[in-house]
Image (cartoon, rainbow, N blue to C red; front, side):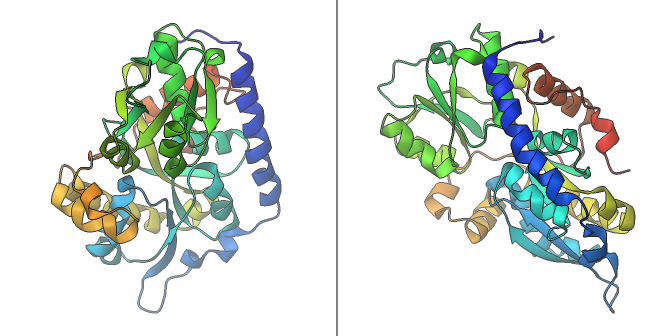
Length: 328
């Protein structure tokens, strides 16, 4: 159980979220994503043209494998794969109809839903495991999470699942959210910032975790541990209009993604083949990657727990019922 918190920093995070996501809600007014979507009509050969947005991480190997193995085509989907920015930054392209189905972290999705954007959950993708590490410099006096009190900690987005995970873990060791300075910066900038002394600790997801380990940074824990264990990290989202207009596409997408996830689970060789092809990851890094734990089913109960934590930490203002967002 998580007690209700009243800290200044979570209120600040919520304010930032309202400003960022609220602007999306305004820009969405009057949009006609369903009218403009390329998937509303099948092509002459019966294929559905679908624009799929993904952030180029190890975890999105699922969509690359679904395309490369022909699963999407077999399911009747002619896919245009589009690389996006992470977190909330890609959601405007979804709402506008430029992207039909998008990979995003769940915190950004739920925050968008709370602000009134018509997002709908399609499928899961990955569950948190040891591919998300917390790192400090080799000579740092930080030995564990309790030592983060009064320190700065880098996350890639203040409105991300990382904020929820680190706050939950800190609370368990007696450190309040107001006692740690969260700093937002892109993943590639974190290790240099740590080495230069600009931050005291960082969150590194693969492939940046392996790069940090190879550069001599010291791992002090897992980002998703304790009360944050086994949290679903990212999944696939669409708009309610697209889902209502294209139920066969949603079913086909889920089928193809599930096949890809089965192929990739604990398959290091397949990751080694795929990951350097759509990211800037060197083969020497890919060889050392900690593999994600794929689960393309939506874990509603666990996602609800994450939504409840977002409410507890002030990231969303009102409780959110996750099951209402799921595409049937």
